[in-house]
Length: 110
Length: 116
Image (tube, rainbow over all chains, first blue to last red; front, side):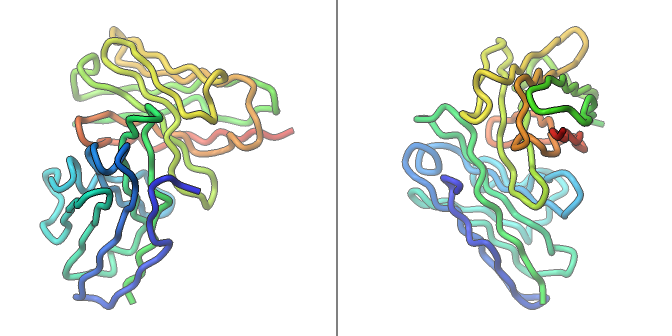
């Protein structure tokens, strides 16, 4: 069981908005940067959001990140069928001196 | 173009050893932290180990004492020496460049299968 908790799955219709949560503690999410990754099955993960809310070049502004206390959220607007993938959050844990991944959330665009 | 290419994966018996390689190009390798992560079939991502620019290392509890991460800046190369391998270590292993707030990019991965 992951220390960073994500919902196993979310779904929404094309064009709609979805949010994916990542819940942790003060030793990880609460006091360290959170990043988010998209992984299409069979391919390598791709960075979507870093430093809680920044987008790398090439990532559309349909993707956004936010953090409040010990929880972080990935938002995706204007859903497209190409957004179907697994999404993971990541944070450094200061107590464990380890990088932690969330358990992953499977996004289905209905 | 920033690129990471892993190699060295394969089939190994339980208790055996394997060394993974990650060749980096397109950036100044010596100035970045580097990491290994893995993903078992049908499972989520798991961080394995990281190494800083000064050679400082950190490991996941599940591999501490069995795996060793190292780097050779002159060759733009990252390594993962894996000893005392177990069936539970079977996974695709990825190397990734560490940024202040994330990992980017990731390599394509190399498959390690531990089985008799």
